[in-house]
Length: 310
Image 1 (cartoon, rainbow, N blue to C red):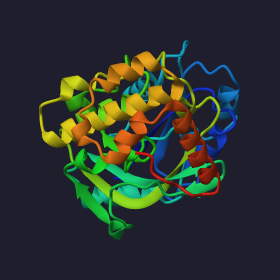
Image 2: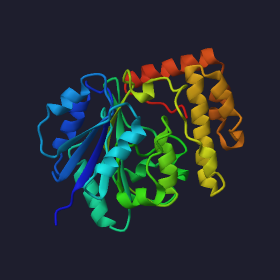
Image 3: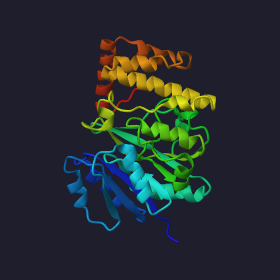
């Protein structure tokens, strides 16, 4: 019996990138899959681009109005024919052997339900490997990560475009929360990895496109709905530390955007004793100096040099 993947691609206003994204799927060395593109009421030519790609494995779902990433992913999950769901954002792309490597993980660990790989980041054409807390001695190795939260108090080791999730996970922990319009992945990771281990290949097989005008990571979030992570507190210390870290990240996000009220809201939630000296220093750095730090970091990224600001 042939194994198939269902590939879910949410699409909103990515006309300049979605063709490359889909081609990275069609160019896979493993060819047994379906592609489900959810056009979330794009206002540019994204839909025209995907309709111009002729392949019997592509299906397009059209939302009459923009419902957000969570709803788009949920539409794709519900429409999927196969048990293993691979997610890919419409401005990211896979290495040709991505699905082949994921299939090896699934066959090697048939009782596990969540799988992922490392990734690269594309900053203005410069490709960099993100600095995570996972030791480089594990590079290209396969790991079973039982405590996801302890390992992700910084740059995440996965992205939404580098995970494959079995449908049983959604049946147990629920789908993406459609009320959340920013950091919906963090809310899902908490529910998922509180119940399942992550089978992980520490090889960068996905490339994230960063700093694109109009992308979520480069747009204001002061009017978006952030997840309420407080409801997950108290289950175990590593999760509490993970939530505290993301309250810190949210606080910094609002500092970036000048959302003083929201920044103060999250600042009150943070347990400073769980942060490093550098994290506290950055958190309280006066805005003019903080802005200069971000500009300096951006210049380095354009040269392919990444420094951690976590």
